[in-house]
Length: 478
Image 1 (spheres, rainbow, N blue to C red):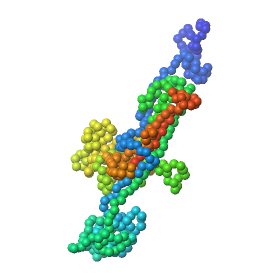
Image 2 (cartoon, helix red, strand yellow):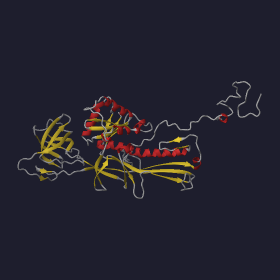
Image 3 (spheres, rainbow, N blue to C red):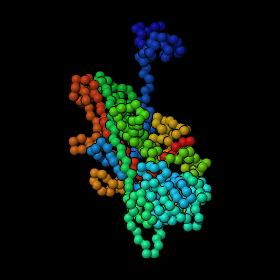
Image 4 (cartoon, rainbow, N blue to C red):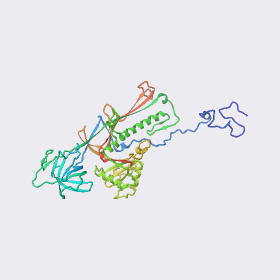
């Protein structure tokens, strides 16, 4: 018995059995693209896109630790204080009773030790130490003449690599102090110390991106429902591409402030552009770098970091943004520390609220006189960024001081307080370039040209200001 006409590809049979004429096959030669199968049966299609990488955005670091402020110039300049007390490294011993405090004749080092100053001379090579009285000081040759308090001379000291610092002065009864003249040795003439500062600068760079979709593709519906981190959803695929371009650009705005480098005109072939100094480059140049922190090194290695912080600004509260392995190393280190005198938990930065700290992803601990709040930094874990780099010179974390610093503002002409890390972006009453986006073309609501497409443009002009980088620590792999 046969059915006439036949519908589709199925031919009925008198008995219940599997035959070529009534069994659907994926490899049906009649339709290599499975068109014959689709005529009889539509596959089960999952509409929603699977978010296999979770939240893929990386920005947020600078929002936690800094601020954003407008600027109207091509360059931002700030000044940082120098140390208060007088000290010199790398001094030499021309004779057993003279010390050259500036043997390399560096332009930024000046002899300001006055006669009758009392100094400490340290010899790191031998561990010897001597307290001395300065009897003469020459600001032209940078040589001071000394008389030790408890030694005849410094003949047992190493001739190079000495450290000298001033701890006071001593004058005879009835003596007077007169102003000294540069290069003249007259015994008790006083050298006035003029305060100086270090000046730093950074320049904003222009960051741009664009997404283009033609008008025909905008009118094409898809079968997969898209969803993105910024809440965009629907069945129009170009919505996803436009949304991801925006998200990617917003990440770039932070990443360029973290990874940025200035162009070295002496070696770089780049012309017409100047680059910008990001966080990592600033710490490498002016901050502290710790190489190879591991759980095995543990507390002793971390205490070395604290001792170094003591020689810098000694900022009480600090934040640690860490790669996963380094965060685990810290957890292993902290597991051996009992509460109380050894450390314990600290949440001072978050109004001593554990709930607030945990909601932001931080856990706190105290060591010595310092509070630390640590969290994972997604940027260092993501396989498409720093998470895909392990080993030599890999960035494994950064210590950022909390709070603000006092700097001299060249434009305002006064001292102001600013976060240690903050972003400056170009803006004026005429144009705000913090984050610009606009449409061009003739599709998607834009009617600016005859181009049968929609162009979504993104632009920003910004740079990062890293103040007091000597208080930052960069953790690097071995």
